[in-house]
Amino acid sequence: MPGSVRPILILEDDPANSEMMQVLLEEEGYATLSAGTAAAGLELAGSCKPSLILLDLRLPDMDGLEVARRLKSDPDTRSIPVVAVTAQAMSGDCERALSAGCDAYLSKPVTPPDLLAVIGRFLCGPVEARQVRGEDPGPTGGVGGERPWGIACRGR
Image 1 (tube, helix red, strand yellow):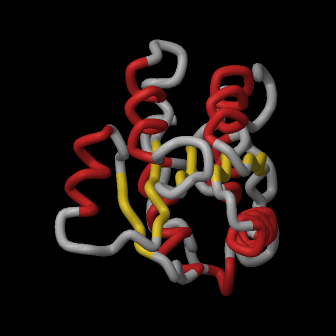
Image 2 (tube, helix red, strand yellow; image 1 turned 180 degrees about the vertical axis):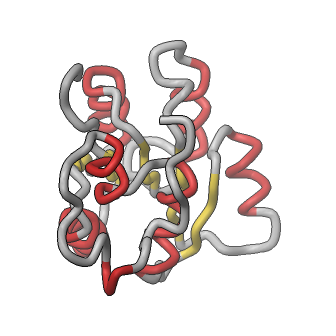
């Protein structure tokens, strides 16, 4: 998607969880796409090349770990950061997610600061992106004048 911001793909089958993440991210200035099945998410990932994927590990049509493996084995999607966002929080679940190709792991319920901090590890936040492009980031430069994404963009 040259010349535009690539969205964050929310791959979550629970409509309430999907909407919560979508509203939060859009309020922070991120563009989003959502899919409720693995098949739809894999198709969107391949066609839209999102900047990051938030992946529920329990999807109705395919195990989220298999989705992560497929994303990371495809040359077109392997460089997209994948964050597992799941209620699976038993011993070893994080390690299994990381072994399957996820780049980070968050257990539900996810708090907004935790979600934004993990996204910030991989992406330049919208305010910083506007600064890099030479645009005015607004009067506060972020929520309360702070960097809600926890990073400064270096080398961009």
